[in-house]
Image 1 (cartoon, one colour):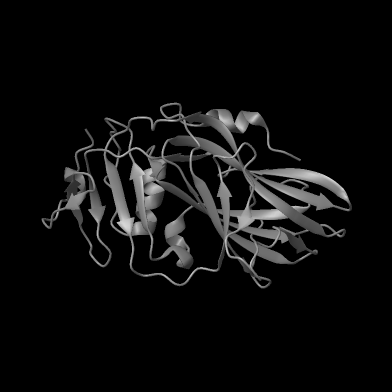
Image 2: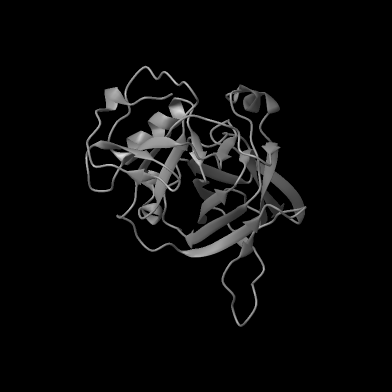
Length: 268
């Protein structure tokens, strides 16, 4: 059962978004992972899905840097925190859009007695623009504390019908994409979607259940995922291993060393 369109109409209307890049994913078997009962959304689908949209909580992305474009003239009610996982949640809650890349972990568990073949993964674009929508300052955190990622899967969103493929060749060729889950079996997809424009999008999984094709839409807990390639003239960053913000400017950004209090960040 697909989620209603009504849930997607609640997306922040100050941004509207583009697909114009490449999606990559990493997949790892995880038969012992516990899948919580809160799913996205809870329904009668043949698979249970847990969406982790805070990449700073995923060890595989611990070496990555996470950046967010805040709305121009933003006036958040509270100052940003310091630890990266909290920064990610704070930025999203205050209208921030993932800069350059959106990273999503999907924990997928089979719940059908017939078994489920996941034969494809794609991004469905809701709104798009070839040029990134303008925004405000950027906030950046993370880097320098991760682990090696599992094998990658790539999706070229510039194709007419983008679909996922394994990025690493086996015996000189790319194996066909496909994962079969019996009841209780679990698979982890660690997906990275990039763009040079601005994108509002959702994930679609193409399934075969009992010989019948099905399509399951995956959202960011009822909302679309949002990604932008916008680069502003300045921003702020918490460097890995530090506990303070510093101001950054230029392209590529160069950051200073003088600590900036969270209450002193300027959003315009």
